[in-house]
Image (cartoon, rainbow, N blue to C red):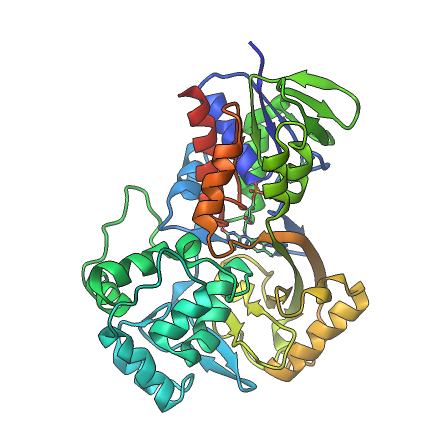
Length: 452
Ligand SMILES: Cc1cc2nc3c(=O)[nH]c(=O)nc-3n(C[C@H](O)[C@H](O)[C@H](O)COP(=O)(O)OP(=O)(O)OC[C@H]3O[C@@H](n4cnc5c(N)ncnc54)[C@H](O)[C@@H]3O)c2cc1C
């Protein structure tokens, strides 16, 4: 029997491979680069565990931690240090504590919002007023910016909507589709007339944990997120071929490698980013290829610094900060990694990282290393008074790595599916969720759907 060919060895491709292996179906995973993992990369150096991109994943979406358990990583899962759980928002040059009792935009505890320094009095009242604003009738989709302005007011967009809700997607809030990224918010407005009312009701009766579910909102692995990739690689063995870039796929289901080799496939699961995917399917369907090529992405970069604790002006007192829209800085956010997660820095040391790029300053990603380092240090000096020289520093660039789910995305996705032949599955962060759990789910479902 011909194998299923999986193109791309990021977490989506690896999860698809795992599913096929469990079901005894022949498959071959072709990864273009010299390592699996794609946008997941952990560097371990000098006692630090430095994440190049993802540092953790959501527990409420169970697919990633369930996969960890299945492959024998159950006792390697770690929760965040929630006794230090504090997040700040950089606004007007100052770090403001995130108001107590917020669920993203919703003040579940109004007192927490009223005590906060993050919003003006008018901004607070506007946020609280969401509960009494009649549901709008904007059709099936709109941008995150439009939704937040309409329901919660402009200050909520500036201080929470853009940095947190669009920030998770490294997206432009004026472009990001609500229907694709926060469909539950649209549903709450439609069904309850208000997001606040629905969220408060849900908060009063929290959903029970699934069997085995970690108790913190985010989880990671003791040795970094890459442990998931290394373990999958070991469990999948020779069915993963590295340094095997694919050049094209043809209508006869023949996969053409850049090396000239051709492999006949039973079916293909394509998990490469959309720019590459568009090129690969040009011979299968020009319409599908054009649609994939039209999908937008943004670039980002992380710069990590390890310090001696005694060199810092004070402890890293929280999980980090996000940056309000229109703040005169090139920073997107900062994670205080050694406070957020256990074991990220050796004794007496601290690790933090800052994010650059996104829609406001995408060109920063292309700065030379020394200029990007200098920018990061200058911003940390200004925002956190850090003058110390780091004992370790690392830059990771993620070009065109953040898919933009533009308004109208559900229809676009429907068309993509319609234009794909039955033997071709598109899966991964450009399609149905950017987080690691969503990628695992998509990979496994793509594999299962071929069996159906
Ligand atoms: C800076 C950053 C921070 C993030 N933080 C988090 C986080 O904290 N939590 C979270 O859950 N998610 C996070 N994410 C998102 C998450 O990491 C990604 O969405 C996910 O890893 C994408 O996996 P993927 O398999 O779909 O794609 P990729 O990881 O892009 O994998 C695609 C693979 O295809 C290969 N490929 C490309 N072209 C070819 C070809 N022609 N032939 C063969 N192979 C090819 C590539 O080399 C790559 O290995 C973050 C992302 C970024 C960029």
